[in-house]
Amino acid sequence: MKSIIHIAALLTLSLGLSSCLFTEPVFTGGFVQSDLSAAGVWMTEDETGDARGREFAVLAPVGQDAFTLNYPVGSKGSSYFEVRPLKVGDKDIWQVRLSATFEDGVPKSDTPVYTLLLVEKEGDGKLSIRPLKSEGDHTASAAATQKALSEKSPDWDKLFGEAKTFIRLKDR
Image 1 (tube, rainbow, N blue to C red):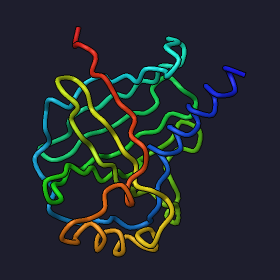
Image 2 (image 1 turned 90 degrees about the horizontal axis):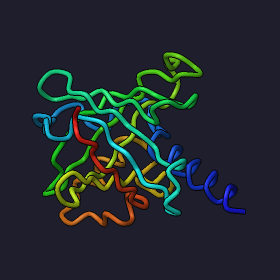
Image 3 (image 1 turned 180 degrees about the vertical axis):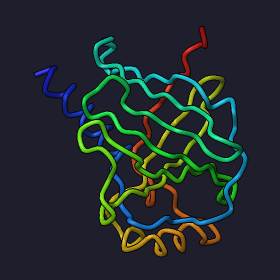
């Protein structure tokens, strides 16, 4: 039973962080300089405390306003993403574009490759990552998502899913 719950949690996280909703970008400008303190190797803890349930992500800076993300590292389902940070109100948003997957290679032109992540610092060396929900009026198009985020006080809980906390590992 424990392994079924573990597999379901792992699958949910993988789909939540890597499922892309749009073939076009939500934002084409307004990107901010990358926070270099976010670069490094990140890890999630399994809810049961089992070390075998840990997942790893590597975030590497590329230029002034982008990162490359490999997630989940070491898995056959591993994917590579371009991450572009934005500020929406007082929130940190990452626009994520799927670059390639281990299994499928470079995505075809009609494949949805864009999504957004809400990123919140939870203290030194911890990030809470919330994926854009895949259901709701805001997912009708990239423009609908941008409009929902541009409201005076967006309902962040309505737009973004459950958080997963990543802990930054120390550089060697």
